[in-house]
Image 1 (tube, rainbow, N blue to C red):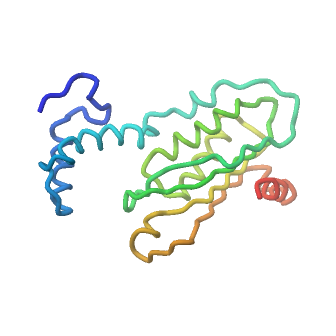
Image 2 (cartoon, helix red, strand yellow):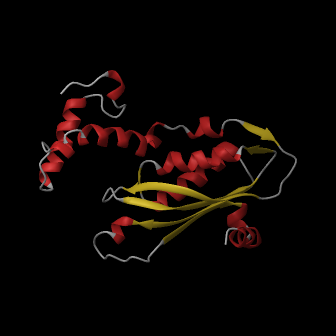
Length: 195
C-alpha cells in the first residue's frame, strides 16, 4: 500500500514496522486486519497517537517562559480545565478536570498557558498522582510564585471498563506547594473557590 508525505506521522519514523505491530494487535484481539474496515486502521491509529501523546514533545519552559509584570499578589485561579490522558498501566482513558491556583510574585502568565501546560503533561501515558505533581512543579519552577496548588478530579476508564467495573468512582489528587502548603487559610480559600 502506498502513502504520500501528508500521511506520515511524527510518531512513525519506521512506518511499516509500527503499522505491522498494530496489525498484529488487531489479530491478537481476534479480528482480521485485512477486512475492509480495518485496512487503514494502523495508519489512523498512528496518526491519532501523534495527537493523543503529543505531550512528549512539549517544553514547559517554553510554555511558561513568557510572563508579565504584575503588582498584584492576589490568588489567580483557573478552574475546570478539561483534561484527557491515558493511564500507563492499561492505556485506557483518564478524563477529568484540573484546577490551578497560584499566588504571583511580581510575574503572571497568560491563562491559556496554564491550560496548555495541563494538555502537555496529560497527553502522555500517565498516572494521575504524577500528572498533578508535574503541573505544580512546573508552575513553581518557571513562574516562581509564592505558592501554587493543583487539584485534579478524574474518571479512570481502566476502573469503569474492566477490572472492578465501578461506574461512579472518581479519583481526586492534590499537589500544594509553598504558601498553599504552609497556610491552611490560603489552601482553604482555593479549595472553596473551585467547589
